[in-house]
Length: 231
Image (cartoon, rainbow, N blue to C red; front, side):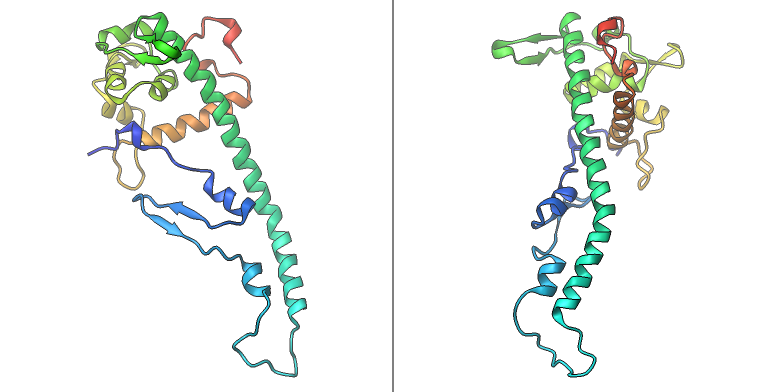
C-alpha cells in the first residue's frame, strides 16, 4: 500500500530544539510511532554534581573537578554556537511556515465557499460539503502547488475527489486518484519506494517557506487573480 493518508503526516518538529532551550527530558518520535526517551540529566549535571566518585583518585596527575568542569563548559559554549544557529533557523523556518500556511488555507477556504463547495456554519465554523469530482473542476487546478492549500483544508475523502478534478501535462489529462498524482509528480518514500503524501507535504512546505520569504506565493494562492493577495 502507498502512504496516501494525509491525516497521518503531522510531526512535532519542535521537540529537538525545545530540549536544547529548556534542558528538559527529550522525547522523540520514531518512524514507527514509538518513543525514544533520553535522560533528564544533562552532561554538565552528570559530570559536575557534588558527591563522591566510586573510583579512587590518584595523588599525582590529578585533574581537579573545577578544571574539568571549566573545560567542559568551554566545549559546550563552542558547540553551542552551532547548536544555537541550528535552533534559530528551525524556529525561523517553522514560524514562517505557520504564517504562510495561515495565508493559503484562508484563501482556499474563501475559494471553496465562493464556489459553493463549502459553507460557513454556526459560530463561523468552516464546513466542507459532500461534493462530486466534477464540482471541484471549477477550481481549475493544474499543479501540486495549487493543490496544496486544499490538501491542508479538505478531509481525505474530498481531497481524493479534488485530485481527480486536477489536470496535468498542460490540461491534457485528469489524475485518476491520489496515488497517481503522487506517482506522476515523483513524491516517493525513499525507504519504501512507494508514493507518499508525507513526502509531498515536506516538499510543499519547503517550497512554501521559500516563496513566503521571497514574497512571491502566487503559485500557492487560490485567488491569484486578486493582485491584493499577492505577497
